[in-house]
Length: 357
Image (cartoon, rainbow, N blue to C red):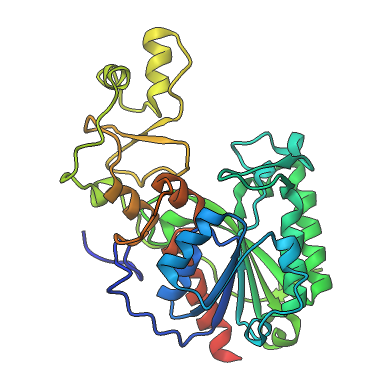
């Protein structure tokens, strides 16, 4: 396939050249460092992270060797009075605050305000307020730009009231904020993945960029339209590893597949009148891969097997030599912003804002 993409979807940490000359970044809710790797690919210097999950931060530390890393809830991290001066002079504060109540796969509005717990033994907490804790941290540190990634469901239904509150909180913190619904498959990522990105620029830096969005709204102009050609499943297919075989039942269902089936559940309903295997999604060779999630199985429509590890890493634009330690690969990659997606956004911010300030 001809390479028409700004960043590679297959790469290695040990061979990558990170220039670190575009600005300084700190990452919250850092997971294993998907966003961190994106900023590094774009030439930024990532100083460190805040993360609540001990297994995730262990993976972050071994892969990224951060200058600063804090294993604690953001609710206590934002109150620290011993943070280094570098964190008060950031170019970008990055974060992906969990808002699982708004996920398309969740109970949405029914779960607002309920305590929830993620995997890996974290303490229960009300996840819906974490976004506002993150904005509190931004108000304290006053970085030039704040970037917050979240689920598409945040823009639907009654969740819009939550978005309005996010805008109000950023306004009170001293920022102009905009949100963009972006699709990773248009950004050089071999995966369909729609996510909302809130991008906020500090008001004292925004003057030269301000433009009218409508009769009542002004915001700093920035182009976040991406139109890179899709990378289809056939482009990343790796036939050297065929060990991801199907179970006996899945194999029997696969044999009865019909073009257009979304998952093995379609076949199970058609052939057995049983609702099952709905999380075993088909991958079609002339389409980008499905959104990676921690609990989903991906079955090749044209080959009788599951997606293998090399294909998973390509889909997530994770480096081949990433050390997952004991973490499940699908879970960590699925929880992470694809590095190339972050690299694209960070590059636009540098080119359109930072290079002119």
